Amino acid sequence: MSRLLDDVVGELSRLPGVGRRTALRLAMHMLRMEVQDVELMAGAISRFRREIHYCSHCNNLSDRDICDICADETRDRTIVCVVEQVKDVISIENTRQYRGLYHVLGGIISPMQGIGPSDLKIDLLLDNIAQGGIKEVILALSTSVEGETTSFYLSRRLSECTGIRLTSIARGIGFGDELDYADELTIAHALHNRRPLE
Amino acid sequence: MSRLLDDVVGELSRLPGVGRRTALRLAMHMLRMEVQDVELMAGAISRFRREIHYCSHCNNLSDRDICDICADETRDRTIVCVVEQVKDVISIENTRQYRGLYHVLGGIISPMQGIGPSDLKIDLLLDNIAQGGIKEVILALSTSVEGETTSFYLSRRLSECTGIRLTSIARGIGFGDELDYADELTIAHALHNRRPLE
Image: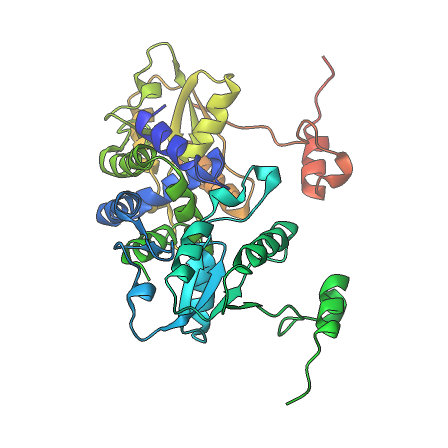
């Protein structure tokens, strides 16, 4: 009907969770936006893909070779928190409770999806540790089978590094969660790891 | 953390149904796409918004001043199907059963949303009818209160035009629909408009 419309619907429906119907809805919404706002959006998409860097120190997304967190001299360089994805860094940063560095693996060991240890940025982590100065490595991976596998693999690789304290984020019942909605494994874990009341 | 990431997440989350979390997911997906594919997407968005036309005859989206349907000499120019939106044209075209022309109102009368008859392309429809040659106008609007209001308003305006047969698409039980899932109004309508078995 219209090549311009076909093109934009075709391109948008390449995005995950966006079918042709949703793509059409998004396109029609763009027609109601100002031309310069749509240009800003298209420009931001294009610039993001062309100019984004992966931090050469921690594999986080960055505008430069070294990300703002790694470049921040006020952060505690003795602690590294290992996460799966960039969005995990954002989640932890949003708490404003963590002042150490991160290491983004860029995925998780998943034989089902054909992702092995060599597909993750594990050597970079070991290199960083070999440089010295790191005293604690916190594993903050998901509790899925893949996450546990990755944690186990990392703990084995890191056990070769002397003088490193290896920890994992606490598992338990989240704030606001109901006990009767939590699964057995979580409850069992939370009971096993009970703490004295402060 | 990264201005490029912030920008693309901010821009994408302006889209309807896209929050910051979804926008981040879309952005991360774009990183896994080839650079040239993301450029194609950004280009398609920008070009669509800058270059799309509304057909000056039927208000459909078009790459040119007159849309492909209005320009198609093989279509039956004596019938006009009045629809609310561009996506309705696409739905009807997909049936490959209709060979007449369309008229896209560009909305529906909705006092709640402050949309009155003057916000719709009704005068253009009346102008087209006044040019002569149109024998039937099919109303294919939604069955909502707003759709019924718009149909009623149009039927009054069109009653002034002589020699025009005014029809509405049939309401009834859709193919594959279960009777006990249909609402009372639809069943009543389907009963009232029963047809002799052919």
